[in-house]
Image (cartoon, rainbow, N blue to C red):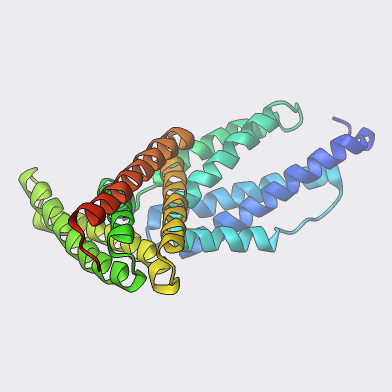
Length: 290
């Protein structure tokens, strides 16, 4: 393409590509500088250099010097701190896939498409984070907490009809269940041939996921005085947790979000509704008042 004959539409497209490359170069550089694993560091810094080269090449067509979007870079790095390098790299991998497709449609930038495709595979190859190895334990803790505990709290709500009592009873039940889940995971991992260190970490991730979910779901009963209102807020929080976790899981495992989210949400809400009814019936037929 003749640089002097570039149209307004093409200029806007090139500027968008240039900005994306500037952002990617800065993100990869910062992630590389903070990476603990030497292999991850070297790959990320090399990718940062390649993205910077792409941005410089495109600048020859736009005639402009762009800087990375500080807000995008900041939020991406923060996301890496909060959710782990693995999650952010998977998100960046998606961007690389879209960039590869876009570049392939323009003859001037078609050479970049091959490089972007290579980036995708290198991102996959370098992902090695502890949480990924214990994702099964996290899933176990979260699933059990969301299904069992939403049901338990819903049942307590009508049976006890007191937010402080629900919070206290739920806390005791949740902590005991988390310890029980962790113990079961430890014994299960050991029986499957895992060493003591691996079994302890599996137990820790299972218990931690369960406990975090428990305290999130109990919070409405601490801050809200009306049991039914607290129950509605609790169920809303449960849906938010299910959505957040399944989005995370779908990204790192390359699975569809909607199917997993729908299935888990339906199960949790169905168990909660059934427990709500059971709590009401027990209260009515036993005549026990909290």
